Amino acid sequence: MKVLKFGGTSVGKPDRMHSVAKLISSTPDIKVVVLSAVSGTTNALVDISNKLTKKDTKAAEEAIANLFGPYKAFVEELYSTAEGKSKGHAIVKTYHDLIKSYVGAANFGDKETRLFLAQGEIISTNLFQEYLSEQGYSSALLPALEFMKTDADNEPMLDYIETKLNEQLAKHPNKSLYITQGYVCLNSDNEVDNLKRGGSDYTATLVGAALQMDEIQIWTDIDGMHNNDPRIVSKTHPIHELSFDEAAELAYFGAKILHPTCILPAQKRNIPVLLKNTMQPDALGTVISNINTSEGIKAVAAKDNICAINIKSDRMLLAHGFLRAVFEIFERYKTSIDMITTSEIAVSLTIDNTLHLKEIKKELEEFANVEVEDEQTIICIVGNLPREKAGYGFKILESLKDIPLRMVSYGGSSNNVSVLVNSKHKKEALVALNKGLFGY
Ligand code: ADP
Ligand code: ASP
Ligand code: MG
Image (cartoon, rainbow, N blue to C red; front, side):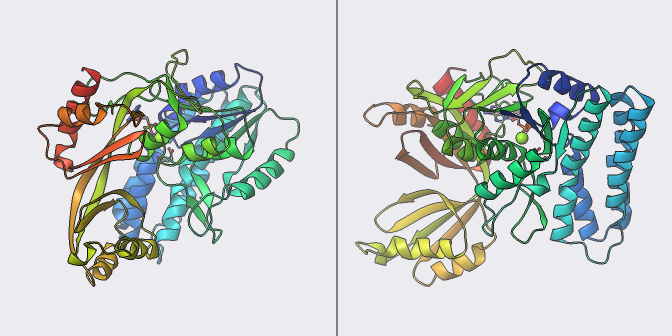
């Protein structure tokens, strides 16, 4: 059994949906197909929600019309029969009417926003399943809200997902093709929620892990994980093999092709993840597995919107318990720390969740001087870098010799070296590393 996830661009146009249908019907194995929303839809739903939250009714109505208008042509092109088209228009109307019914609502807040954000994947999967049925393929639609759930810490509940997903599959014993929504889940209050932006990848790896599948395939618009961010530097190349650790570091530190934490469920259950290109299905792509990959630096990635906190105290000098006191404050506010560097009298660390920054700062200031700098970027250099090998640190720092470095973290793992730069130096840093490490 396999899970195949198709991202927003892979289902973004009717002919892309046609290609996806061909791709998934080309092999006989049992498949769960996870779809994203049609590209642009989730962004539009975020925008509509913001406008409704601000009670900007006119702008919201306009944005709703702009989102749903193009779905008319989409439906006309997707289906070839009058019956298919009519069913497609009916699907779009249902969700258009649902969204429209909130215009002018007295209370439009977080809960309603989360409900809105789920509709993109609900629309795309309904349209796609109807297309499969028009084309004579037998499939079953599994509602993600019936099995995908997170706990009070917003962590996916893998055992629950396994049980509920099996119950859903058992309802359709004779099918070999199942379609479901990426991204969408229920939270611990049983409200409609999501796995954060880009979360369809996470749905796929959770489904793959829950059902202990043979393989997890993530189909997107590029031929696998590249050595650098192709949106920022002009020359990049695909990497054909990555270990789980290497891929997890790249995803967490900004390689947009993968959701930040989506590798973990696959790694936990040792299921290979394949990154493939829907537009070029024959390209090799990237295989992510538990292999020992060859030695060397493989890729760099960048994570923006990082906040650096410098905590300085005379009392740190030889004081045991200082770091514990610092960490306890972050733990209390459920704020995770990404990078950390220390000196005799100070510690610098980074966070990306600044929701409780004010409270954290206030508590730290009870025993230390605290300086906060935002608009920082973590640049992460990933590969198989054996500890006994000399030269990697030199090569990285030499490549970055003209860029001011705010923090450097080396040795936390043998897969990752991270540096922190002001975000205004991000592009320069990625270009410099592309030249210094990969010769471009
Ligand atoms: P999908 O909609 O299929 O989930 P995404 O847009 O989320 O696709 O991810 C694919 C995009 O990730 C690529 O088009 C590429 O621009 C971007 N990207 C950023 N860093 C990398 C990288 N290191 N390797 C490959 N793609 C990357
Ligand atoms: N549709 C969601 C997003 O745009 C989830 C995804 O595409 O993975 O973030
Ligand atoms: Mg994505």
